[in-house]
Image (cartoon, rainbow, N blue to C red; front, side, top):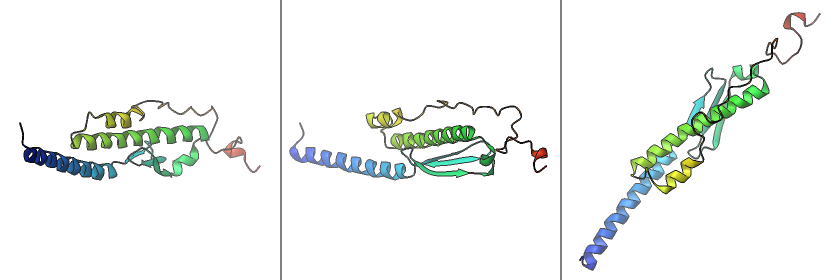
Length: 142
C-alpha cells in the first residue's frame, strides 16, 4: 500500500500529464480547420474546427451556374471542408491518446460522412447556354 506522500506524488504527476495533454489538444484543435474547393475552383470554402463556415469564395465560373447547381456545389464543397476539419480533429485527439474517447465520438457523430448527400447538380436543360437569358445569344439586339 502506498503512503500518503507516494499517493500525492502520483496524483500530481497524473494532473501534470493531463494538463500538458489538454494544452497540446487545445493548440492542435486551434489549427484543425478545413478547406475545400470544387474541381474547377468555382467554389472554395473554409471552415473552423467545429465545421462552422469561416469563408466562402466564388470564382468566375460560379456565375455561369444555375442557382440550384451553385447551391448544390456550395453545400458539397462545405461538407468536404467539414470532413477535412473532422480528420484534423481526430488526429489532434489521437495525438494526445484520446482517439477512442467519448468526447471525440460525440464530436464526429454529427459530421457528414464521405459521400453523404453529395448529389451531383442537376444537368442543364437542353438549349440552355448558361447566360441567364432565354434568348439565343446570336438573336439578341435584332
